Length: 276
Image 1 (cartoon, helix red, strand yellow):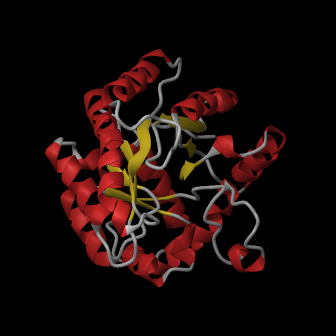
Image 2: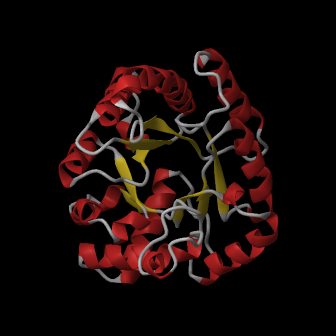
Image 3: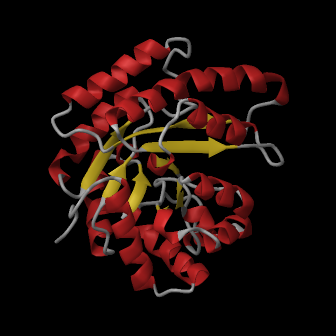
């Protein structure tokens, strides 16, 4: 399972070839994650032909520029309406969260306040709908502003931790321990293959609450990254991340693939989806 990629980022002429390579690589389920209200709808339409193999979400990325930041009630209504009217309901809310990786100290407080206004309705809607929540969380080096604000908000809104997933987990092993002690899930992306910090986190991860992803077309894994860093990532390249994970977890690659699929079905409540 690729637990997080972005189908809408590919040209229509390339989608079928990209998906064919994913199935050939052994992937059974892809989760195409929304980053705006507009592509929540677009992604759903694009995935219709692959029902049972490609699943979609609804949400707004913390850095999405097109949404007014001061209308949480309007955002909540839009998310709820999408969940209620989509013929095949999304399997999760997100991606949402907090990102201050490139925000200056001068603007940090104001930007975090605005992003929290967006985050709160996502948490509330996911909680009410009893859906998983896909979270984006990034900080500047040496700073924990986003981490502390995000985890604090989940506690304040009493969101069930077992339904919270931090995708593309990029923090150290101590943060991973804190998060999984809290009950949360993590997903590792292609940067697992080149970051020693992320590799150490994966090595210590509770495997029963661990997923893997490409975040395609972003985060090309090694060895592809070194050969041609300008190429787009795609779900088939998850094989490289899974090979690294097997090494770090001291298990076979077959075991990592089986674990990933079983965990993904459980986290997203997919039952036997993706078989065959």
